[in-house]
Length: 100
Image (tube, rainbow, N blue to C red; front, side, top):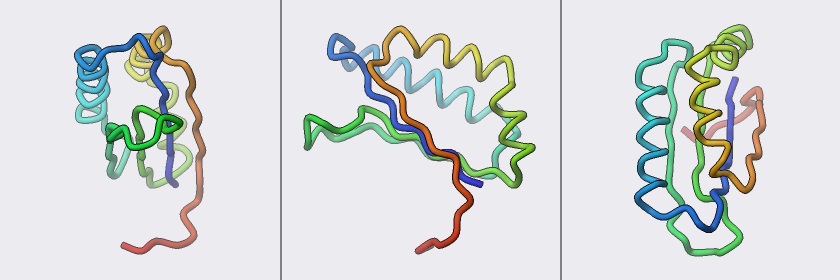
């Protein structure tokens, strides 16, 4: 099961704050035990319509994903991000094909 999230930060968010938010997200992701793997990327700014950050988290089961979603630390990270977000789009998928 894969959890994909695109975060678009508000235009007023400067690189220093963006990097601080990324650090907060990474600390949470590195410390949690719900997922099998994850990656977080910062957009390179090639297209003005692109999201600012992309997150992909893989889980062994829907139960593990639910535990991750309900985790108090996860809720704290979301609360920290929320005031700086223009948009958040997520999709939870059963992976049916992969090039890896």
